[in-house]
Image (tube, rainbow, N blue to C red; front, side, top):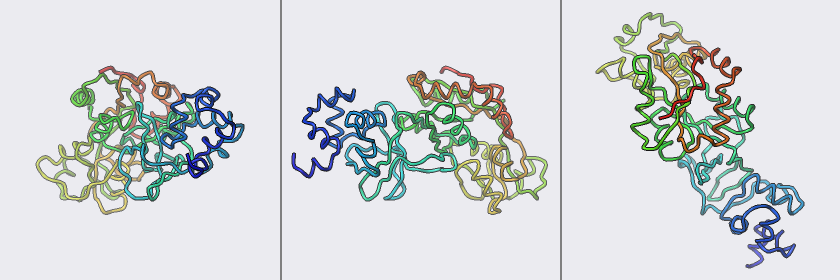
Amino acid sequence: MNDRNISFNPVLTQRLARKWSQAELAGRAGISRAAVSAIEGERLSPSVATALALAAVFECSVEELFGCGRILKPQSLEWAWTPRDESSRYWEAEIGRRRLLYPVEAMTLNPTPHDGVWQNGVLRERGSAAENTLVMASCDPAAGLLASEYARASGFRLLVFPRGGGTALELLRQKLVHIAGLHYSTEEAPERNAETVRAQFAGDCRMLRVAKWESGIALATNDRSRSTESVARRSLRWAARESGSAARECLDELLGKRKFTGRQVDGHAAVAEAVRAGWAEAGVCVRLSAAEAGLNFLPLRTETLDLCFPAAIQHDPRILALVRLLRARAHRRLISELPGYDALETGEMLSL
């Protein structure tokens, strides 16, 4: 191997300086020889635990060994979904046996530093917490609160990507997230969440109850409408969620055969903000988002928010930590204090 490659890889440089074989380094660090070979060949980015083990063996810090902004070859990279820009910050997570990169988004829900930057075909890594990361797709506007409590209570990291129920389940089916949130179940159709999951998944799944919440129509503060029927009859500009989401389903049922006039937005908070800003006159969202935006709210129905995940990962420490949090008395009390949320069944588990 030429000097350019030797100087490029710090692990290889340190190992050859000590005249160790790959097998000897692997034994000292407690990792496999194949892992050493992959790290030296830039085919594998070491985990935090592996980086610490290698640094200890070489009697240096992780920063001294790998540096800040280490350049990695992109051959083995796999994006969960394509970044919007050529330059993108990313988070890293491990799902199954795959390490996936997630373009940074929704920082209000994920106030956590990025793991690296992808720019001009080069990946610059700051440090990975892939093994300690749980990935969830959910439109719950309180998911950021859940992520914060989860990190504090468990030491793990929860990344939340705001997606409607239909999209979230599709990401789960493709094994791009660990958990999908959905809220199709109502008091009139309490089994809708379970039926939707069964229709899309052949394998065994679990559903973890987060809460019940009020879904309804957000209206401007000066709109004094008192019935949903009168609102439905009016010609209004609507902020609507995407097709496949429970909120869009609710709006379509409300309007009947009439198509909505307005614009599509992403998430309950976006619906409320559109009405607050004045470019929409009404929108279907949960009471929490309407309350935070200072809007009037007409309840339509009570929905059940569940988190779905494959039964195969039910004993994963990251999942167990989430279950413990949702069942904790302090967290249930916190959820019950959110406008429109009912935590009576929070933490209950259902096998499908």
